[in-house]
Length: 414
Image 1: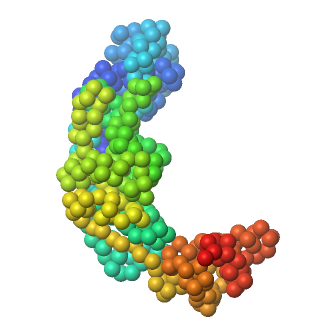
Image 2: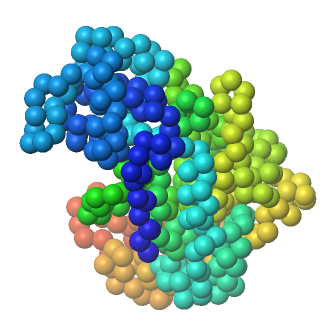
Image 3: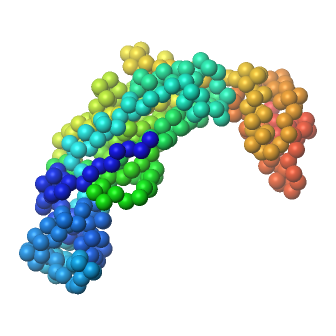
């Protein structure tokens, strides 16, 4: 689905950002990049040429920039000596020199307008998204129901049963959905960067003449955090060197999916993390704190998925479990499911499938190694076969000997 474009304002007043902030940003950008045409500077800042011309006239009047020539009908400009001095003063206060930010009001309005709750999810779409996984219909129905609710999901169960894979696969349900992400947001002259090339998958489209260049067209984001998560990562990250902020993980995940993997093993306790998110999960708003102590309110428009192999009842109290409306146990697989996963993995590696060999692996896992059947075992055992064949410099082959050797390497002896 293509997101509707965001038309650029026809005036500086309509941008929602103070004129002097835009002038300062233009001067810093010109100082750092060097001589440019006004068209190039406008493109860098995400503004249109008429607005850039207006900023240029003011900076020229103040003797901060001067014209070095023409490129067609557009001025080429650079900083004067006074402009260089002023740019250095500005950079000492704030080193942000990227595209112009959007206002907090525009950000909030846009996030709410492209909410994850506006997505249409049905059985056919869920089945297509999870067609590569072997899941029972009840689990698929629970997942689809949770997505329709827009509420958080708790995936729990033993290790190796596919919880993380299920969480990541949820992204496929809105892979074709496109949203707009701002490069940065301005609050009280403070800059908060939001667009992150690591998190956000940019979608290139033919340029539109009146498109607001301060926004990036992206697929709905998927952000995963694990054991590295700290309570500090859930608030604005102020860089003391650059003197501007980076948005926290939940702000970068807005309008998308946030996976808290291995929940309970973070550097922040489950109680502290969940207390931090009681209000966001209930009211779908979050409060972030600027360095001076001022709090700002932003949308918390996210599918949050908690995945854990620990007992949820021992991790959090009953009051919080009630706030997570959908709890899905991802358990050991049945022999039938194991055979189907084994068949698919063999097909992936272009190896012939033999149901009798799958049954032999099931027997070895249960009787010789006394382990339950986990969804990860077919992949892990067949990979052992492939790796060993690579070491011996021969083609891999699935037979009783190679699979027995793979199991000896993979499982602990009892």
